[in-house]
Image: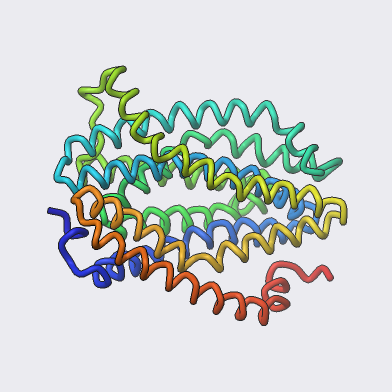
Length: 348
């Protein structure tokens, strides 16, 4: 029986959330680092990157929905002591990510200009956004697999290992960003394209690390007995949970895209500021995100084990925490708004 269905609820969630905090901090620092380094190039490159945020968020939430579906089904199976079934779902989920990632990359590649024109980008800013996304789309399959591997690791309840993967990606990106953006250590100066290339390389390395972790440490990847019928059955189980998650999640970036289009009417500086504010907002959600990422495998494994009493207790506690945290962080960020904005740019 998994430790997630045996130990005390509060003790279990805290023991999962604390290691995960480093990972969610790293995940948000990843995005902030890109924004901060590109801001050093000027207001126009920062505005160009801000235009990419709704698209990047949309695709990120899309693959995250597949990862959430796979993680939940895997956790159900682990909670019911069916490890072989968990390995089958994780394996077939990785194939789904390859297919979805490839389709999204091709569709995205050929729709860059019309999408960003629709968002309000034009001239030099449109060109820079296009340069960034053409490189970014190359890593779409890496990105999808990285998300799935990390989510499945979370589904096992080993949040420390998952957190390590997130930290690895952030450290790599933090090192590669200045080298490729500004042309350090003999590398050519690539500007905003360097930020995209640093992201692709970092995510590729994290994806490979996640693959090794799942296959060797947890034994949750095995392609030997995969059949077309079995693969489609697993995809159906994953998407039964993942599809609603995708539909609910993508509303946020769609709304962000609409607001970005409105903000674009106020000029380049307004778009740049809106992009920075969005990154700061994501950082504010770091702690509830940590609790949520820890709560998912706990809920799923206890559901698989038939322990609905533990599911209800954890849910009530999490909702209470989220309400209190939301009110507190709103007050803190309202008071520190000017200081936070000045960290990214001195442009009035």
